Amino acid sequence: MEDNLDSLVLENNSQFTHHNDIIEKNNKNIFSVREDFGKVQRQHFEMGHINETLEQRIDQLKGQRDLSILLNKAGLQNDLKSQ
Image 1 (cartoon, one colour):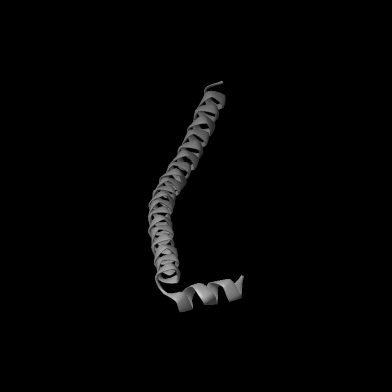
Image 2: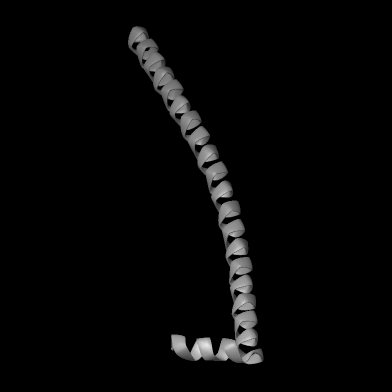
């Protein structure tokens, strides 16, 4: 009976160690995923900022084009030809 109990305790200890190792690996994976997620969030924010900047620049260029078309006769004629 004592031998059976000793073997049972050793088996439980072995399983406990194995499960702790699995938990440690999972925790490392979770930490890595969280770091990756943070990087992706930063990149997403930066891309959104770049997109807004580009949209503003496009609007500026459109406004400049429209103004130049209205201010000179040749620009208006070219616009009418293109349409």
